[in-house]
Length: 479
Length: 80
Image 1 (tube, rainbow over the protein chains, first blue to last red):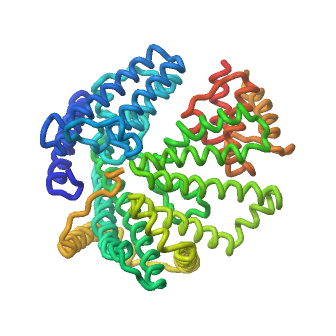
Image 2 (image 1 turned 30 degrees about the vertical axis):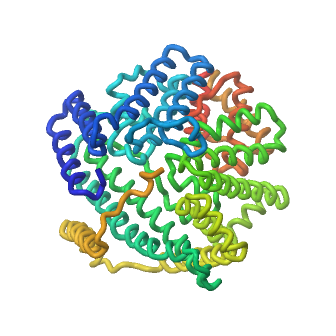
Image 3 (image 1 turned 90 degrees about the vertical axis):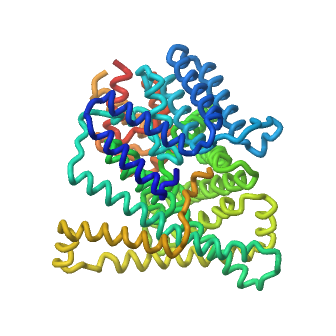
């Protein structure tokens, strides 16, 4: 069920109405459970296609229940291993083709995010952070919450449980308006900004990847434009999706976590990853990066080694994150590029802190030129590294990089970095001085003004959808 | 162990980890207030606190600590 399909609107409206008819907790939980089952069912043409997903859920549930009574490290290790092997088999990773695959088509959407939820439950049950007994229906409502099923956000079970069909939820007019405003903003991002960027990207990509030789400057320009448009498409598609599901969650009493916090305003690569796909970053930080660094530090306790142990942990974490994004070798390159970005960032901080001292280094990072320079290179690096996501086949990727050469990568890098630095410099200097006349603010904030604003956004969505002649799909569904 | 004792012992650990002899701790102190308190030194700090107080922290406890006040509260719970 696509988020832009009439079926989804009808489905969401029906679920919201059914959910809010009664304040009974068992009733509301039944509605949510049925909604999840219907949502998943919309992707199936045959019930057999759901069997691998059901098997994966059953395995996860058994592991969680076993860990409730057997909290040994070996139990957690065996559980994590069995869930990962099952996941890798079902996702058909190209590295493990020898494992074979099931002889029928089946549903793979949602598996990646269900994996994170199951692993989180297993670790937290074993550590005692999650002490309550989890029933099979609660497990299903959490792991297959239709709002988060396709691509998150990755909510902790403890936070989900606090709002799971709770009777105290009261839907007043202000909440309904906020929810609709958030949902419509999401559709504006999704259907207008992201779809327009994708339109441009889809036009440029074939020209860039075509076999014929292009003039050098045209090749570099095409690459810079295609990489930038893809980034705009990815961000607005994903953050628009988040607005839609978070807004829909308000109508169902769910407080879903945010996934983005103005990532393109980040001053460093490490800060960028605290603002981009935040629930995924946090999951990896909690369950892979932190335990790995702890392990390494317990083996090598010398403080002087901290940064180097961190570099190793960054590489491992981003490598796993990269491989999670896709099943080809290019995603390994993506993970290594992200790990390299984080590592260089950390080593740079350590080197200059050692050279200048903490206070002088902080003063350096607060200088205007430093701020915009670091913002520019942070975003340019990320934009070019994303090439791995839109050229996922190794042969295509290899050919493109070969044609571009070092100059063809460095040129677009400097151009994109310069453009971003200039954009932020101008924005930071001009925007604070812009003031809206008081009468316009009062019109905007009035009941009519607010609703007219929403209506005009909806009209714009209809117009752009008609012009583009296509219904956009959610990009992260593929990961 | 009462809160004053925890603050006293925790301050010693902080000063050793961040190599600042005049580092003072308040309940509202966060990573932004201490030079060098980043994701890596946070782990070193957690290891040092675990050793000093003889306690263990879970993955989400380590990741969810917002300020020194929460840290002290958590240590208090684990040492009682």
